Image 1 (cartoon, rainbow, N blue to C red):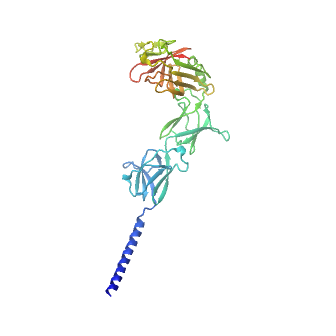
Image 2: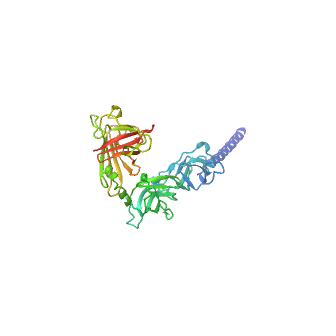
Image 3: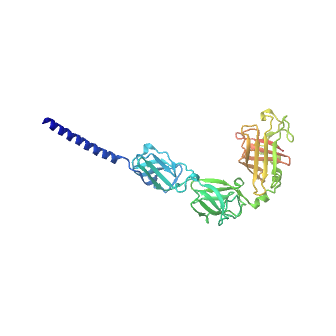
Length: 397
């Protein structure tokens, strides 16, 4: 009898334990993470700056608010994964930094989507995500099939600038001349705007460039901008001496031969004060105008072929181009860029190419023209560490 009672008690205990296990199992199932939910996104700032945001920018720290966020394993902005600050994660919030998004390689329907993922699923939240403006191409503004991609722009032409993050431009300038944004028409990925009709106030350093600015960033985009007035400028005799004239080119070399001799100057390299200038004259009364015009010495550089420098003016596009084939120094190679000769200040600005040189450390972006003749040229470059010029002596090849 006792054994029967004992068995019944054991069975009841087993049943109770099983029931408890079932309840605990059900509770555990209830505790398994549910799919996440995002309700809003705020600035990660102290109050009162922790406001709800409507637009996200790359590099911005934000707080995702919602439910079931404690076990989130990944957050994507425009399909790009972001780094999560695990120490600040709770069930209701995640602190995360918006990653840099390659807008030109992300599907348009994914760009403005934030996605959070946990073991039970994922959820998406739509919000405007932007970054630096990007221009991919320029089209003629015309009905198809005349809306072709433009290879060069003309004054007064209406164009369709196509790219990313172009809305609400604060500045659109062509060669430094601002376009009228009053009539600009924006779409999701383009803006229709008119090229200025007059480039008389253009910035030479921004030749053949569109400057596009938004509240996020300002960028430059290169395209040939043909201004008929520039052809008159290029007719200056200095351009003929430097580059041969419109539609031509001219090649220069350093005045140094294999034996250390020079054909037109005493040597390939002179030194002077910073007020020594055009036509070998002092540009200031009582200025810093000393000149050291020595013959070749070994410390100037090795006896070798240093390469060539070719200046040209393209006839069709009116581009001032320079090609440098540099030899025998650390930064050797062939480089192509652009230049601008300011006929008033007698200076040449270089973009994209370093002038032909013997390997010295100089400020290469701007040359001061000391002399320029049919078969010889002197360009001075500022020393980056002291107040003096290194004057490079070139002869026509």
